[in-house]
Length: 74
Image (cartoon, rainbow, N blue to C red; front, side, top):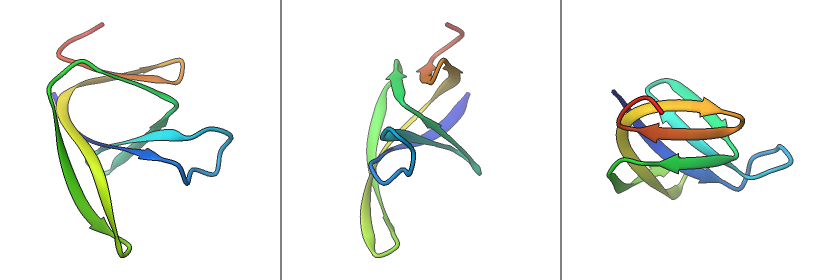
């Protein structure tokens, strides 16, 4: 099971806003997000600005631009 920190990114340079999912040193950018596990909120202070995050643990699967975080395989 992975540990994830998630943040909505309105500053993304692509055509759509994206969810940024941090998994250790990896980062995944997806357009849609489904979380089917308990979540917690947290804040971090980065680049002189307070950032609000969602944190959770589970299994991450990305299909067709949608990230699913679940307790097990879909």
